[in-house]
Image (cartoon, rainbow, N blue to C red; front, side, top):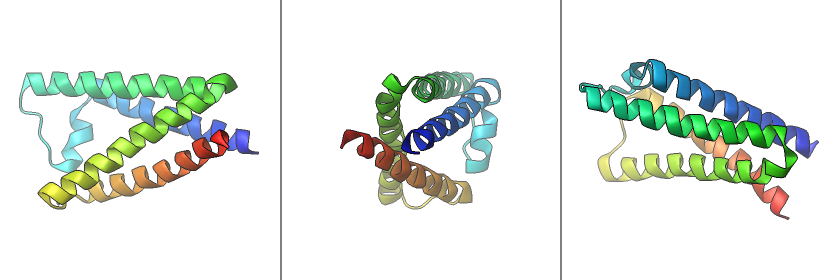
Length: 129
């Protein structure tokens, strides 16, 4: 049962990260318009395409490999812990230093990333025992 939950979780992560990568590459404004962030320069758009397309795409690939190949599963789960943990830490740090953002999507993102972090941490930690 644990293996199936790990597999499903990694496929879910791979799907979400692939979606974000594709949107980041093709229509980056879709990612940022809901937050109120604007992409006013070509350099800014290029940076978003590179970061979101590259990093999210690369992570999606590793999550998919972990879902497909049991020998890569622990590493894929650990990457998920690092990435989601970084998202949560970055958001909380920003809120502490800069104040809470106005956009409701920021709270939705924090909740989703926090829930995901706890879930993958428990799966990864369970493998370590």
